[in-house]
Length: 189
Image: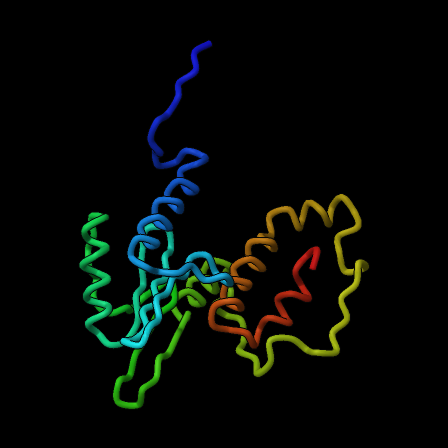
């Protein structure tokens, strides 16, 4: 049996994500960015000249701050450490559409495309729209679960867990109004 010692992180290996995070953290520290105690993928810098916030999502970065010159400088500094492509103003992040209206000073987040794909994936195109996601008086019980071998077989091909997981992502992202309905149907919650 031969064993190889890897001296450099390779994409797909177990420790690759950890090594990448350590690399990012090290570079961000040299750029005087502080890691958020709440979310370890968020780094920030704040002083009398302004604020810069960087969100790292594996190898994608979303940067905001003021004045704009701080963002430009941070992008330049990052390009000295990493091969980068600047995609311009943020339009999509993690399947969430971002629309910015500078005149009214608003930012709108939408998962409409994601929700449409979930509806299509689970063949719910003909489901009627509702005002509320669930009847608050609905009582769920174990008696509603499959009890016979035939009922288990009938439910085996129903992607219940996948549907609940898909809805949880929407609830966490942009649809807190469906959180109760999703979690009361989620097994183990």
